[in-house]
Image 1 (cartoon, rainbow, N blue to C red):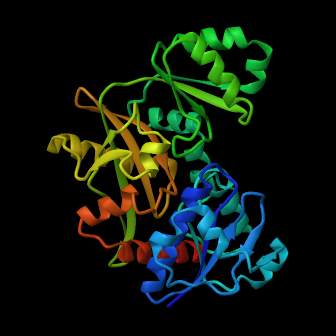
Image 2: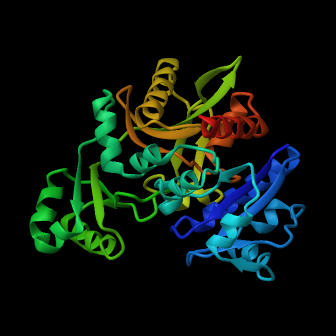
Length: 351
């Protein structure tokens, strides 16, 4: 069995989600017999290593970041240099979401150190996180993408009126979001000019680039892709897609991570042909971006044609997450998924 460090938390707006993901990963790896070392990345940039981790704590008791972080209050905060010197792990299992945990930053850091890690590499992580660049790649590969514009903060500051007029050409409603956001945090459904102006100003308080995209009415589905080695050869398999029926206007942060926030139906209630097409496109998105290990791509099916929304390189692994649901529907255990991710991470580091 391997010695595995699990990174979770982080400074992004998805900190609390990542804590839930990290706990799920730790529990699963522990049941597999691995030696697990949780590493909490705090919101202020610190790294905390627990002196003793009570892996037997029921998962349900640590769903909130406040409860979980209390388990670390009696531990030592360590400098990054001390951490580097004392990591003592065969591989890092990444349970981070958004920000520097998913945009290639932590991946680059670990790569420089020569430490193996799970999931996609630096380039794929950065491309997938940048929604504009990802859309351009999807278009080049022949995928259908809703019309979109990117706006930089400098351009908006110099000419806010022209920026609003440009985005209005997409029509209403449209979705406005940070270019490098995740889990639909700070994503807004815009229905009029006044709201567009207001939300642009709000997003630019914390982000440097935004993307707005035309609204598409249709059936929203999400499809995971897993990689695994079988008989010495790398395979990519698409999982059964999940249909998303949001409790609100769209599949936002609340719908994704609150119990009862949305209905998630796996397999999706779509035709066999649509399911096959979504799975083909999910694999295409995975390979076009250069993803590794696993990914999850979201689509809107309009008139039988899937339009890609985005690809996540570190999809959630919480009790309400889609990859575990889809793996179960495919008859694949999360222990199998994690074993494959670890194998791929270790093999890639050798090459």
